[in-house]
Image (tube, rainbow, N blue to C red; front, side, top):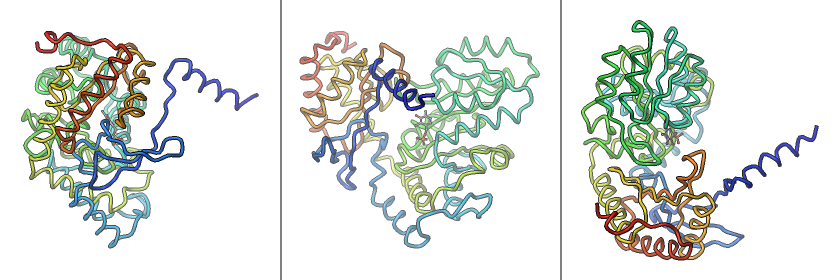
Length: 409
Ligand SMILES: *Cc1c(COP(=O)(O)O)cnc(C)c1O
C-alpha cells in the first residue's frame, strides 16, 4: 500500500478543484488592530486585516489584556487537567456565572471551543432524549452537523429559515416523539437572521425543544450583547443558547446557557466536555472581562454597525456586488473559486489588504466570495481605501458588477 500517495492524491483533488487552502502567516499587533504584519516568501510587510472574526477588536481591549495578565501572574498558564479529574478553576466558575446572567438562564457550561460546545451538546441531547428527531436548518455550521450525526438519532433537514417546511416536518412526526430544533441566529456567510420567535412558536405548538447557535451574534446584538434572542426578547423561549468566546469576545472557548437540569446533564454526559483539559484560567478571566465589558458598553456595537453600513454603502456606490443583509457581515460575491482567489491575492499583493477567499464547502459552489468584516477599528479612511482597492481589482479581473440603480434599490 502506497500510503503517501493516497494523501498526495487527496491534496491534488483540492488543487484540481481550485480549493486548496493556503493560510496567511500573520502577526496581530495588540493596540494596532486591524493593522498587522504578514510574512510572505520570507519577507514581512504591513497589512490591514479585513476578514477577522474578532468583530469588536476585544482581543486587544486593555481590560481584557489586563485580566489575562493578572490571571497568568496569579495562577500560571495551564488549567492543570480536566475539570472531572483535576478540579474546576474558579476563573471558569466566575465566567459561567457571567454567561448564565448574560442569557437570562440559571446555568452555563464552558467548553474549549464553540465547535466542541455544539458537537458535544447536540450529540448528548440527541442521545438523552428517547427516540429523538432532530430538525436541523440546512445551512447550520459544520460543528452542529457533526453533533447531529453523533447523536445517532433520526434527523430531518429543513430548508434555510423556511418556517413552512419546518412545520411540515414537525407535523409529519409522531406528536409524542421527542424533538429538537437546531438553528443559528446570524448565519455567518450571508449575514441573514433566523425568525427566532416564529421558530419557538412552532416548537411550542409541536412540543419540540430549541437549540440556538448565537456564535455570530453574542457581544454584538441585544442591549447587553446577549445576541439576537436578547434583541428580540426571545431568550426565555429558547431552551439552549450556544455561543463562542472566540469571536466578538476576542478570546477562546465556547459555551451553552440553559435552565435547570439541562446543563447538569450535559456536564455529566458529554464526552467532549468531560475528557478534555479545561480552558486556562487566564483565558477564562480574559473572556469574563470581555463579556462584562460588553454587557455595560454599547459603544463597540454601535461603531461596528456604523462602519459595516458605511462599508456596504461605499461598495454599492462602486457597483461591487454585496449580498444584502441587516447584519455586520459584508459578503462580496465573486461567484468563481479561481477568481475569488485571484481577487484575494491581488488585494494583498497590490494593496496590502487581507481578505481570505471563501470557497466550497463553506459556501455553495458558484457563490464563492470575499467575506468582509468591518470592526469599530476600521476607520472611514480605511473603508474608502478598501472600496478603491476593490474597484481596481474588479476592473483588472473584469468581475461582474451590480448596476448603480440596482444597488440603490
Ligand atoms: C465559528 C463557529 C463556531 C465554532 O466556534 P469556535 O469557538 O470558533 O470553535 C460555531 N458555530 C458557528 C456558526 C461558527 O461560525
